[in-house]
Image (cartoon, rainbow, N blue to C red):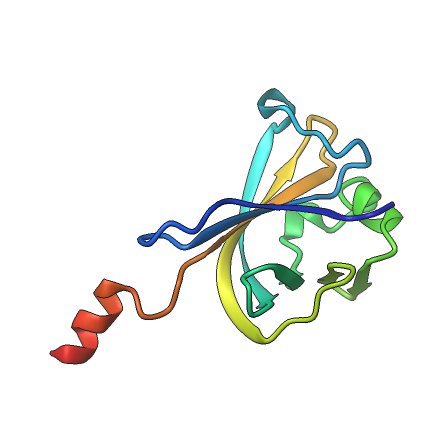
Length: 132
């Protein structure tokens, strides 16, 4: 199965929003998501802002075979203990940053996707803090 990643256009205030699809059908209807579990992720981005790698620690409710059933089917995803590593084929990261994310689970409790919010360093709020 090939991993699919979608990215929004850059918003000067919030940065980029990425969505990683783990379900094999590559489509996700809003009513399919029954639970959203927030988490912190480490992401590696290319110089053009494409997602290259993602790493995160599984939240306790997602540490079971049912939750990981889609993830374990993908050869670009690895797992060591409770840590998951996702490599996007064809991408090489230039920078690693921490970001906020959320795992989307379907009614069966399977992880079907992950949303990642990547703010842009040097936003006006950060610049003002440095100036003071």
